[in-house]
Image (cartoon, rainbow, N blue to C red; front, side):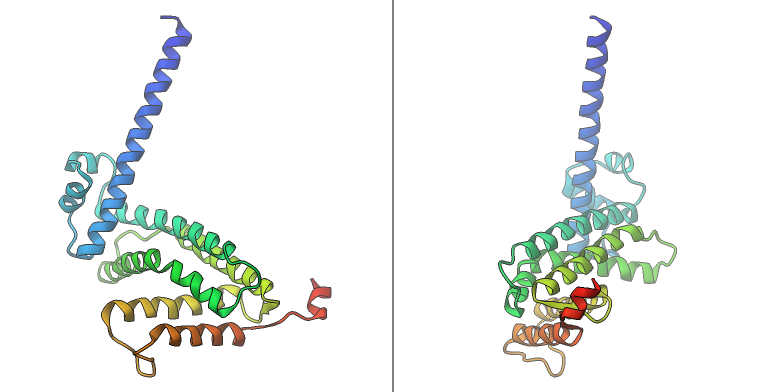
Length: 226
């Protein structure tokens, strides 16, 4: 076989090996997220992960050193996917955004947000119990924060408004109440003052209040300053 053909064969095998390894890691990350969703971080075991992924412990340890490590990668991966979903949902709003269209946008994110909320809460509780355990890389969280702030600024601009505090602060406030609504929905519990018969109407009221209170109409002076 000519040298160029042998080199091409080696490169082809190497490429297949890399793809196989990444597919294995992806299945382990997905399995870890599913197990932790079902059992919590304290109840999850590596045997649970490999069983769900269809691999052996050897396959796990040839890719990851611990459950913490695979969970951290799973969180970063899901944060990146969440960023894409948020940006796509914001772009899908036609015309000038309204509180109703913003609520529809949040509703479209409920399923993914619920998964992220549970996984990240489990990770946070695990870190509180075990402070020496690995942290999720800060860069992963910053990607989400930056994306949310960018969406807030873009949506407000389309509404003819501007933030009067940091856009990330508005995003954090909306996320706080949105995630709280997911917890209430899952547990059936309501916080004093919430409308138990229509919790989403209460959420709509709160988000509308946040948007109006933390933003202001764009004026000619704002346009000139920019």
